[in-house]
Image 1 (spheres, rainbow, N blue to C red):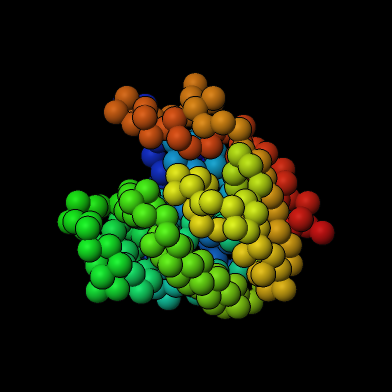
Image 2 (image 1 turned 135 degrees about the vertical axis):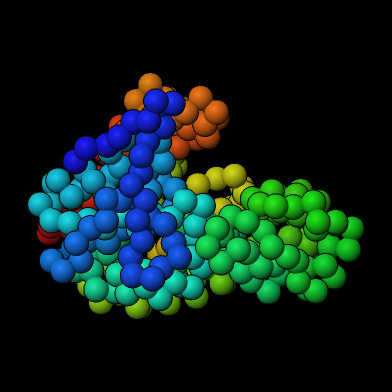
Length: 271
């Protein structure tokens, strides 16, 4: 599979859509008439700045199409709000679902953008009542929002965290129950999922998701794959990015990580 490198060093991701979806995925677009594997997730699955993301490497290993449904800055809501993408995932022989953070979900305290779920849209009356001392017009991104709220008052924030975790479990169950084929959860991080009750770091891999929450989903899946990633920024020379993207490129998994993910997934999907 060939990749185009524009003069500025950036990749051509061959962006594509499936059906009438409003979500843009990394291409080239796969043929859905033959059996295929679907991989749902965020920026890591999309493989931003990576010439050959792990869905492509997995496709080589399996000898069948792997549809990259990685959504840059997306969360569970992006998929659950998009019937055409859900249809692609539903008809896959096998689906791999990345464990995504709970902060990018619309909940009773705040709403997020329906597609770019990392974007904070508005605080609800419940959150404004809980944090009367916060000006919510200052926030654009959910990570910034939850980091400030947690720092302002860990005691008050505990109610927000509980809500995010409950909503995450409910929506993950909805997503997994809607899949017809074999289903796998994929944890990507420098460390294993944190223990239940451990203080959440809004900047970690999947904020507010702990090991107990993942275990609660075990009856709904055929397996859980835990892949440890290297420290971000160690593989910059193997990434393709424009000069103005250098800071962002230093935060994503590199090619070595993507090879490790493909190596971990392949035997599970062929067992």
